[in-house]
Image 1: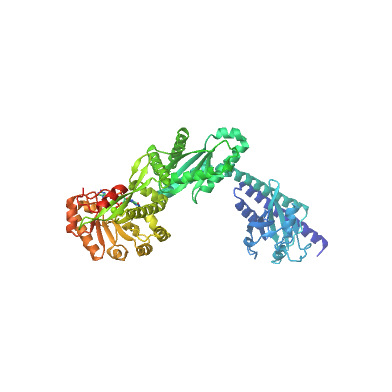
Image 2: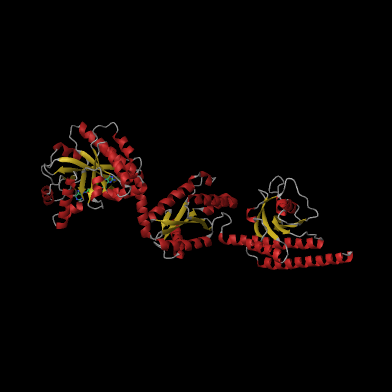
Amino acid sequence: MSIKTTKLTRLQQKELSLSRFHNMLLKINETVLRANDRIKLFEQICSISVENGGFDVAWVGQLNTTSLTVTPLAWHAENAGIDFAKLSFNTCKKSPHYSELCDKSISETRVVIADHATYQYSKPETLDDRIRKHGYASAVAIPLFVEAEIWGVLVLYDRKPQELDKDEVGLLKNFSAYISHALSHLKRSELLNYLAYYDPLTGLPNRELLIDRIQHFTQIVDRNESSLALVLIDIERFQILSKILGRQGADDLLKRFSSRLKEQVFNRDSVARMHGNTFAWLMVDVRSATQVARIVEAAIASVLKENNLLDISFFSLQTNTGIAMYPNNSACPEDLIEHAEAALKEAKASPERCVFYSTEMNEIVFASLDIEHRLSNAILNKQFVLKYQPKIDLRNLRIVGMEALIRWNDPDHGQIMPNCFIPMLEQTGRIVDVGNWAIQQAISDYSTWRTLGLRPSIISVNLSQVQLRRSDFVDSIKDLLSEIDDHGLSLEITESMLMENTQDSIDKLQAIRNMGVDLAIDDFGTGYSSLQYLTLLPVNYLKIDKEFVNNMTSDPNSMTLVSTIISLAHNLGLKVIAEGVETEEQCKMLRLLRCDEAQGYFFSKPVDFETISELLKQDRLDHPH
Ligand code: C2E
Ligand code: MG
Ligand code: MG
């Protein structure tokens, strides 16, 4: 081979090399102009480098400035024998994954070329060495920048040696410039995109994104028949606060407020900044307006509780809240926002801090919340009392028992009947304390009667499902009865209470029976107990529901039912009590049917401690009224 031909070949090679680089640059330029997604851009750059640039492998990696690693984000590496998804190139010499190529290109911010001529194996072996062993004679690393800051590298491997001169290196620098320009452009458009949906101050979704989420969740709600609540919360007197705190201080307050609020939300709920000092909380899967009001009230109380929310002690931070619900009182997502805004406006204008859209709903919610608040202190303030209704032995008309029935003496509304407040106590779990109070009071009244020399009869106290469900139920009764030999306690449970966790309930009730406590099934006939199930229960009384007793004399079916229940109970060794006996006729009929005991207005209404004490003194109701 003559020198001349070698030179010609070199020149031809150079031209070939330059033209493929030009071609590659052209393609990259086209791609860069259309780029709207980083990963797609990188994937295209890699395939252009291989298909147009003639390289065997190309990958793009991003530098993590904390861990000093370069992680490949995209690659074109068919038949390369290297799994880039698992690789991470380190730019720190001590790392076993050290890559001199990446290190130099990043730290010196220049195109680095490693070819067979300059190549020497290092000790210990670097990641570059291990890749080279797959048959790559040369490699090029091109630094990439975002707004003049180093961002990562484009690395190209070739099975052929590369002898690149300054023209070619110049073209590679152009690659770097083009791609870096695209990256900077993408960063700006991502930021714009971010600004379109997020609030830059708090990092919360903005109104646009909230509307998007509402639309998404209304579709889910339509399918699963649940409800959404949109809660708008506004910091009261924020304008004045801004003047006191200054711009920066007011911004800090908004940031702290929003992050506190975010801590209060549940999994799928979301918090957004609507505008200015108005935040939105979208509650998903809510059950009732009262539940929403309770949650919101507790959440706002915890947000405001921390005193470091505001550094100025003379200013007390308060909020106004407007709530609307979907589908309950809004037909579409737009309505929901509009209604919540209307409710917030109302809250700002009225003395109420929290307003529900629709006055009627507002009244219901706040009436029950009001009861809830007043109930929470009722035990402490000794507002509960027990009334007693005697149970009469139908053979001799003597008092053989009494039922304790709770009443609430509310200072504002007078005496309130249990059906109006027991459900609320059950929902909030307060029934546990109130139920224990009732048992304690009944035991204490029983012992008072004994010390007065009376012959008190057994007192039955009604039990709630919530009490029975608790794992400490048996222990709590044991504690209440400890050190009392003759407690005279009996408990009434309803059939429906036993439907869930049957075996667990049976075990607990058995333990209670073992403490000498009688058990009665209340309102029998209204639930769904099977007969077989009845035999398993450790009860000794059945109370026939007052509906059947009431209809007994006019409706033959009720009559048959009452008589059947009585004989069934007797066959099972249980005693029967008829509830709600109001007439002499009913009383006579029940005696004929051999019902054991009766309770009702015919004998006595539930009466207070003094009156029942008088009845006990007579010990016999000769003339029921
Ligand atoms: P219950 O246990 O079935 O109590 C019987 C209800 O019937 C009582 O209503 C009683 O006043 C009423 N009643 C008694 N005789 C007659 C009658 O001849 N005619 C009519 N129409 N009604 C009569 P009250 O006192 O309003 O209690 C309602 C329910 O509240 C009770 O039904 C019981 O389930 C619950 N309750 C009462 N006190 C407590 C308590 O301390 N704890 C729990 N968990 N529930 C209680
Ligand atoms: Mg009862
Ligand atoms: Mg009853």
